[in-house]
Length: 544
Length: 32
Image (cartoon, rainbow over all chains, first blue to last red):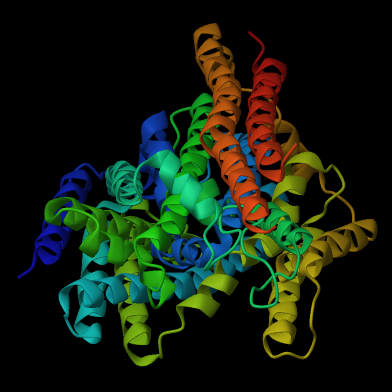
C-alpha cells in the first residue's frame, strides 16, 4: 500500500467519523436540511468554497493553466468572485429571511405555486445528479491514478466515501466536513505552490523563466498563449472569453442551489454577507496560487500528458512523500465535498420539492434519508455503466442554473411585476434555451461567437420570457405581500454590534484589494516586464 | 503601462469595489 492510499484512507475515515458524530445531533428536519440555521461564518465560507471547487479545479482548470492559459483562469475567477458579493446582498440574505428548507421551496412560497417548486426541484435532480456522476468519475480517476486500483472499484470507493458521511448527518455534517476539506485543500495548494516555485529556482527566477518560456510563448503574459494552435487567436479573443465566462459563473455562484442554499444554514443575515466576503477572498487567492503553480510546473516538466494530471505529477515528483500524499488527499477532498453537497441537494429536492412532502417532520426526515440511498444507488449504477464523460456533463450541469434560475431568482426579490406563470415559464425557457444552444453548438450545427455563450443565451431567453409572460398576468395579493415581508428587516439583524462586525469585512475586502494590487505588481508585473525587456536587449545586441 | 501591470491594478480595484459595495449595502439595509 503506497503513501497516497494511506493518506486517502485516513482522510476518508476522518470524514466518516465527523459525519457520524454530527449525525448523532440531528434531531429535527431543520438540522438535516439546513444545519439548524445556526452556522457561523467559518462554516459557511468552508461549505461555499468546498461545494464550488471540485476535482475539476485541480485537474481540468489546472491542466488549462499548465497548457498556457493561467491568466484567463485568474481573470475569469476575478469576475466570478464578484458574484458572491452581489448574490449575498441581493438574493442570499432574502433567501435566508424566508426560512425555507430549500431554494425551490422559496420559489414555491414566493409565487404561491407548487409547479414552480417542482420545476426548480426537477432541474436540481436532473443537473446535479449528472454533476454528481461527473464528480464520482473524477474522484475515481484520481484514485486509480495514484493507487492502481481498477477504475470500477475506484468508483465504488468514491461512492462509499461521500455517501457514508452524507446520508446520516445531512447538512449538519456536510458543513463541518466541507470546512475541514476547505482548510485542507487551501493549505495543501499553498504547500504545493512552495515546492513548485522551489523547483523553478525561487519566485523571481520562476517568473523570469516563464516570461521567456519558448515552448509556450506568453504563458504568463496577461492573455496567456494565443495564436493558431490555441483556442484563442488574439489576446482580445482570450480576454472576451474569460470575461463572458466570468460573468456566467458569477451568476452561478450568486443563485445556484449548491451555493445559495448554504445561506439557509447561516446563523444570521450578517453571516451571509460576511461569508460571501470570505468566500470571494479565499476563492481568488486559491485560484491565483493553483493557476500560477500549474503554469510554473512547465519549468520542471513541460511534457506532462494529459495536462489534467499536472497536479498528480507534482504530488508524485516535486513534493516529499508525506506532503505529496496530503496534497492528493486535498485534491480528493475537493471532489468529495462537492459530491456530498450534490447528493444531499438531490435527495432534499426529491423529498421536499418534487414529491411535496408535507406530513410529519420525523417521517419526512426518514423519507429523505431513504430517498438519498435510492439517489446514491442510482448514481452509482449510472457511473458504472455509462462511459466516462466528465467534461461535457460538467460543462452543462453547472452553468444551466445561471440560465434557468438567474433571472427568476433576482426578480423574485426585486420585481413587483413578475407573476407565477412568468417565473415558471422563465425558468423552463432558460433551462431549455441553455440545453438547446449547447446542443446546437456541440453538434456543430452552428458556430457561436464567444459572446453568445449558451449560458448567456439561456439567461436572455429566460428574461425575455419573464417580461412577456408578466405583461399578460396579474400579481396576486399573496405574492405581493410575501415580497413585502421579504423586504422587512428583522429587528435582531439591526443590532449595532453585528452591523459593526459586518462592516469590518467590507474594510478587509478594501484593504485586501489594495494589498493585492501592490503584491501582484511587485511580484509579477514588474519582474515579468523586466525579463521581457532584458530578452529584447539581449536579442538586439546579438543581431548586428 | 503593460497589460500585466494594468491587470494587477484591475484585480485590486475589483476587490476594493466589492468591499465598497458591501459597505454601502450594510449601511443602507442595516444602518449602524
